[in-house]
Length: 330
Image 1 (cartoon, helix red, strand yellow):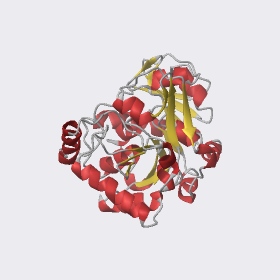
Image 2: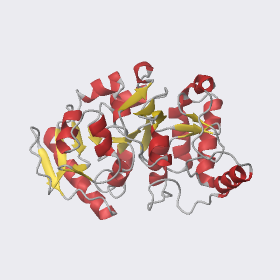
Image 3: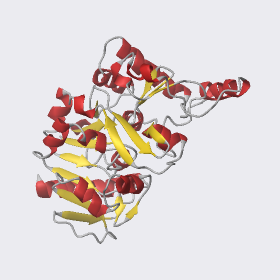
Image 4: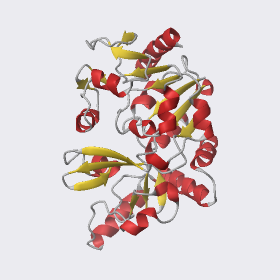
């Protein structure tokens, strides 16, 4: 068995064509939940859902978000109604006292459904409503995720990093805001001053995740701060990585990042925005997979390949490099 840490689009892209190297039935994906938000009372788990939809063969691979060809009737009606009612369409947090009311898993990221700032397709919404209904019935997020995986005939084991709330909060000159507001609604503006993983000090690793981390671990080319950082903020999770073989794929080529806000976020949190900075952030990593053009000299074993992930063939190539690196350190 091999366990992949999944956040953002990096790990899903790595796994999208890797079945010949890492069969889904022989792998586990642990999903970041720091990006989760509650909108209009239903819990949206973006990183879990990207893996769920990928393995369920319904993922929109143009956006790497949501379900392909999913109608957005309800989303469009919400915006039409807000316009008719002359309502502010900026992200609307629920009142402070509501942020810690209701189901605990949604703390510190509760938004109104008025003109929802995140596009949610109709079938995608059905997934979120079903997840939330299962939580309200008393299921854990781990149990609800397993039920959804069964519904999509997913062979891979998909686990949330914790059943407790951990919210990624970006601190800016305009005040703190949830990562999804900063990235989705505001397009990565304003400048980031710091990143907080609120709730991490009180969150526990589930028995299922603890067992998954006994296997060799692969950290995909995800954002080290907001995709992997919430997991590393859990003391037990971080400690487990010290005692198992770990291979990481850099999301950088030297100082150039492939996509997303990783460079800005690493700089804001005191890390060099580069492959060297990633290595500093992952002292537990026993080996790295780097791009052929990456000149970074690391003090750990390195396997070089073209780390572009634009097609299933790319994914298989990078997966084979990951397997080579794992064989070297496992």
